Image 1 (cartoon, rainbow, N blue to C red):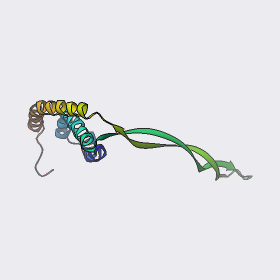
Image 2: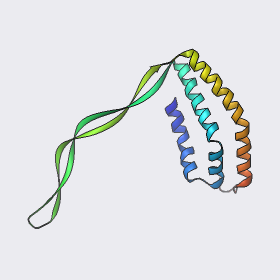
Image 3: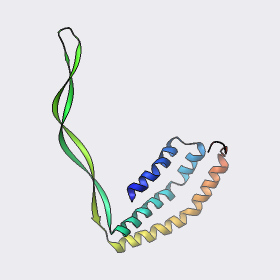
Length: 139
C-alpha cells in the first residue's frame, strides 16, 4: 500500500517542484496534512495486512563489462571492454510483525491529527487560490 501511495503522490511532488505559484503555495502550506494522511494510510494498510513492510539495502557483486581506453600506434583512442566485478545495490522489502494494539492507537492519533489539520489546510488552500488566482483556461 505505501508504494501505491508514493506512486500516487509522485505527480504531486513533480508539480510541487515546478508548478504554478498557486500550486507551490498549496503544496508548501498543506505538507503536514499530506504527511499525516500518508502515514494514516500506511498504518491502515498495516492493520489490514497484519504486518508492516520495511526496506533494506542489499549489496551484491556481479560480473559486468567494464570499458577502458587504449591508444593505438597511430595515437587514436579506442574503447575496449573487459570483464570485471561491480557492486550493485538492490532494495529488498520484507515483512515486519506489528503490535495491533499499538497500530490501532497510532491510527486513532493520526485520524485525530488529520481531522485537526483539515480545516487549516482547507483555509490555506483557499488563501493560496485567492493570493494566486489562476486562469480557468490554464487548467
